[in-house]
Length: 114
Image 1 (cartoon, helix red, strand yellow):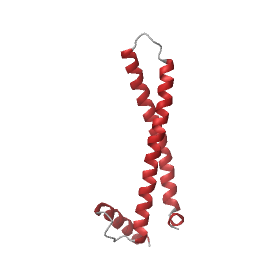
Image 2 (cartoon, helix red, strand yellow):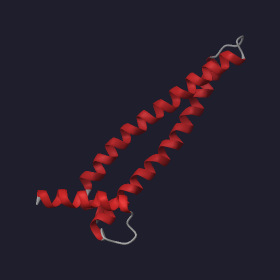
Image 3 (tube, helix red, strand yellow):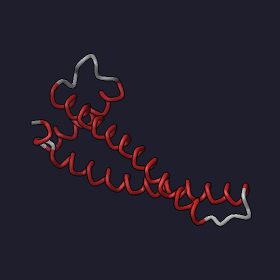
Image 4 (tube, helix red, strand yellow):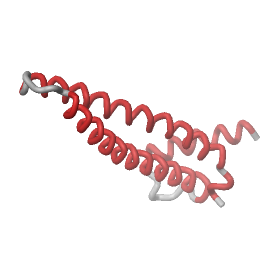
């Protein structure tokens, strides 16, 4: 029920999450390939970097995918917790002070729109 009532929020987070996933993959792969190339050139000047760079690309893709999946899961979980706290019990004792500030701003925005 919470997801159905907040489809737009989940949709926006899904689209932004996809963009951030792509940026994360690119960043992890690019930084690994660049650092791997320079380390390879520094340590072994006489060998061709083609095969090691292919291995670096594969491994960096795996690491980037794992890291970005954990990041995406944490973002989705945090969004669900905020929405649940906002709708069910915004004044609960378990809500941290920083989250109460966010919930108060959200409640004020909803009151202004109504």
